Image (cartoon, rainbow, N blue to C red; front, top):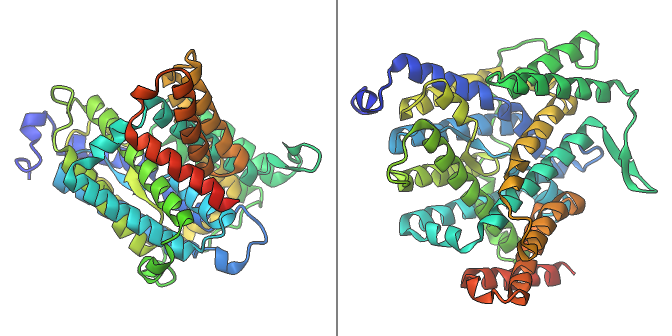
Length: 440
């Protein structure tokens, strides 16, 4: 085992890897409860039942997809990087594709499946790097920041901090509402934990908020902690049954968005965590193809089980900071996700007031990419800004991407820099113009 995971070469041992894997799990365990609530859109009242996914099935799908993805990453790529259904992508799935576009969640799962299969083909063919390189870095950073703002907006809504206002579209909510006060308490606690550098701060913030909510009778106390694993029946295999519904311009944009965001989330996480762990060689990532395959294969598995895109988690950096250096840490994390399957009764205490702080804090982490954009160059600043601001204001990640990718060729050509634009960007320009024409 030590030889397989190269313990001696990496200067690590079982103790460090187990602690690192546990730390990574605690840092990302919030997804077990946030993902079901996000995909089921529990923060949106009065939705037709057919638009909501089954939270129990999503919980099981989330845990298994995370376990499979982390196991593949550990055994094939041998990196201390864990995977799970991605934040941002789950919000896009629910609030843009299902809620705004009106696409049935079954068809949306088919879109995730197809994007995963395309991801595998691109990875095996080596085209992935070429496509990534064709999109300017500033737009990649803008997409990440825009998704961060969108997730934060969703969190504020779920908490009742931001509500509908007929005069100004949005306004502050009722701060005498106990649920809103509970969410604000959760935000404060989570921020304190994160500032203090507590590993798993988001998870512990949710735990403390839930306990306080039960103490003040704002959350029903669960009758049990360990229970039967929820059935996958409501969601399993739905991705296969609706493949004939994806051949539309609308679904093409959805699939491209799933693919695009997963592309760059994964690339950024792999490079960032590998750098931190000292695994980069000559500024290149060894076994990059295997790592990308693990990521894309996990997306395919997750879509079949019944969850949105599975991707590499930046929270893995917490495990690396705790000593993880090899894929054995990812195996440990995978085992912990499987054990978590038995704690589904706790889903009932994870209300929107409890998940809102996690969404808001994750959003704050994602907008850090704003600092990577050159705001002094107006031809770059305009498409980047429009990408970022349009996502929360239109309540659509896809719309934000489309607007930014339309304006980028326009501003660059007008600046006399048209030759710097990759042909792929012109192709995306046409696709997104057609996207708006189709919507109209």
